[in-house]
Length: 451
Image 1: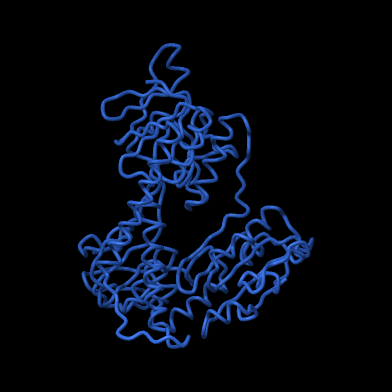
Image 2: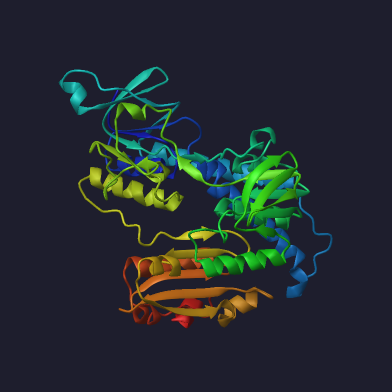
């Protein structure tokens, strides 16, 4: 079987690339050993946001009296919340499969393995992939193999029956108490979810602040908001040992036990670079992922890599854009990948989002900047919809007037950050964005007000 493009991995990068390639006339085959949609759709982005929205609805019902609405005997059913999450995932997976069919992409279920090149002229020009005993030949290869959870060598961890995000997503009982090891995006989102449903949640983070990579001041503000809701935080704390109902941490040289009925591990993810014959390509590795150029080509120009496999930006929306760039290059359009405006969002309640530079990154680069910052309560719409709500909009502006970073804490930060991302990607000056007409009343007006 001969193809123009073979893609290993059916996550956001893989299925996006396959759809574009197929619709542009490239004979395309897509290999996926599990479920179309990858980690993001099946056990990451979509299922977690579905759960978090149920928690948000539950919290809104509990708080409804603040808005003049009476709701009595407010309760939740976790099994039904999980069932709705599963239904949502099935619906979206079916949608991805329909897109592949419409684009004429052949989808093969199974573990694809890259074969070592043989002898002869033909072997020099094509790449070979084996799956389910069948050999597939392709002119170009795209690797979208994703990432997996990092499991650190913590003494006693493997004997605890700990959760990763996967087990937490399918659990049908709310733990009485939950120790979250890792204060990154995954850990904080699950901490918010189980806290809303009534668990006593304790978060342990090795660094001095949660959400590394996000604006540090706003991350601290969010931590304070979540503390008010009952979440306990231990920052600058190292986990030195665990038991089935206890986590032992060390802070400033002193050890203390933290009791919890369940442990959730979320210390990060790493690219999947084994199990599919990568060693047969002898590709160059950069840090912990595949090294690529601005067109997403690896050290072998016939082999591309997108998404988490590069180890650079482990975000679904980054993967999608990388896939667009890779296929664009295959089609001769030569678009280049830009990482200067990749939004990051944490879907807690309240949400926090950022795009572009942070104060920390600008300071590290010795780049001068000014801060324009306002409380979210300067937006009338925000006040109308967030009783006792708090939040901040922070805009970083360079000496040339160009916007270099925007960071927002407060609902709906995940939607507002799109405006900022466009402004940063287009190198807009603050005065240019300020001159835009924002509809009134909208929460998005806070950007204009801050400017």
